Length: 297
Image (tube, rainbow, N blue to C red):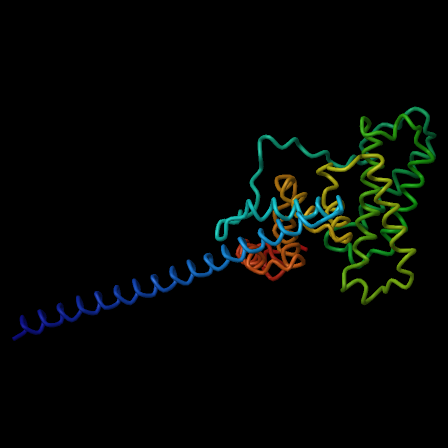
């Protein structure tokens, strides 16, 4: 009798295991089918979007518009739904980024007085204290003021021969301009505008563009150290496809959290919902998003 009960129990256990396996397989099949459907729909959307861009390219009479449309087309042609790259990996082909030189570590150059050099060192030290990832939004007024003063001091006190990127002091000047441009661009963030409204939009726009142009005049475009500001300027000018392509071209030079976030945001601004949803999912899964406890703002 006991043997019969044990045999029956064993059979029931096997049946339960088989039933569970069937349920799991069915669930997996449904999940795979749903994923395939999503990717299929995204592929259909992508094909239609590329057709619309081709039509716009044929009808466009503006060179600027064609450049923007060509950039959008290039990104969409590379994108394969469900295969969007995750966080970028360091590339052996990527030249090392230039670190911001700190004047405290440099010898006073010839042609710069001792008192002038001390003033420059103190001003940069103050700027670096204020302009951190954690405190930038709260310190914007002071950052803009100190960065403006520091840039002006560098251009007046450094000989012209020490203001080019072939010198460390020239790189210090470029980073001062980058920090100023970045701080000014931060003023457009909704959370910042709420606390510090932009009352004179033309004056603000002129100041941001002038600060950015001084950086470009010195360092030219495409410097990976300053690429995020260049990307921001393209975005605010409506050149979102070119901003997206610039981001992709420099993905190995950008901190992963910023690359993933800005890719997501650009795709949303372009209105490319299928690509945006995939980018948003990858950003959320990375553990680097604002919502993640590991995120360091």
